Each structure stands twice: as C-alpha cells, then as structure tokens.
Image 1 (cartoon, rainbow, N blue to C red):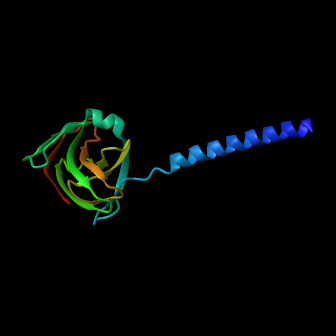
Image 2 (tube, rainbow, N blue to C red; image 1 turned 90 degrees about the vertical axis):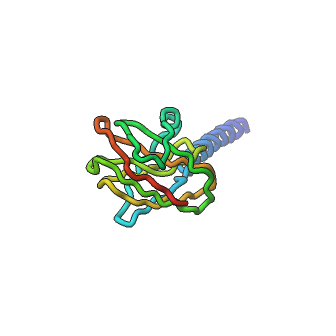
Image 3 (tube, one colour; image 1 turned 120 degrees about the vertical axis):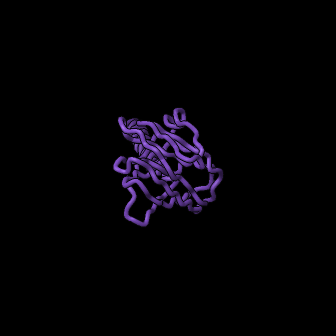
Length: 158
C-alpha cells in the first residue's frame, strides 16, 4: 500500500511539471503581431524590434515637416492616435539615398515588441492593418550604422 502511495505522488508531481511546462510554452507562442503589412509592388520584409528599448531612445518627429533628417542608427516616432481593430493606414514615404534601406511601420503603445517593414528603392507606399484596437505610433528607423537618411515625403491616411 505504501509503494502505491509513493508512486501516485511521484506520478502526480511529474504530471504537474509537464502541465506547467506546456502552459508556459503556449503562452510564449501565443503572441500575435499587432500589425500586418502589404504593398502593391511585392512582399514586405518585416523586422521585429524590442519596443522597451526603442521607445526610450526614439525621438518624436513632425510628419508634416518639409524634410526629416534620420541620422544613422536612430528611431523616430509620431503618435497617430487610437485605431480600431481591422483599421488600415496607408503610409507613403520618399527618402534619399534610395539605395539605403529604411524601416517604417506602426507600433502599438502597449506592446513590448513591434514589427516594421524594411524598404529599399527610395519611394514606397505600404498599407498597415491593425489587428487590435489601441494607441499607435508611426515609427521610422534608419538601420544603417554609417549612412544618414533624409525623408522628403512622409504621409499617412487612416
């Protein structure tokens, strides 16, 4: 009788450990992107950023400025307000030098990670569709560690 009791306790402990591990793994896999991107001229290459680090160093910018200077390895953001689930935002951007990439997109203010689209070619239009309601920032980033970018046109339409 004593052997059965110890075996039952050991089995129960093993089962608890298996359930705890499976629940924590599922929680990590359940995170869903807040924004999906499309563009007419092909697929979007998406890069993931750690917003906890980026929001602390990102400068605010005015998208209506005549031009926006984006030094090497910098991030800038603009609060575009509250968006509803399923709402789309069309983002147009023109930058120089066009041979250098730019990262651009929407990030949710309450998320710990965000996705931006990596663009090349000097002029692009993308559509960002949000999956959940919330406050969003329009974020631009210069991934180059040596080249400065100048944005001559940046507009968005909700």
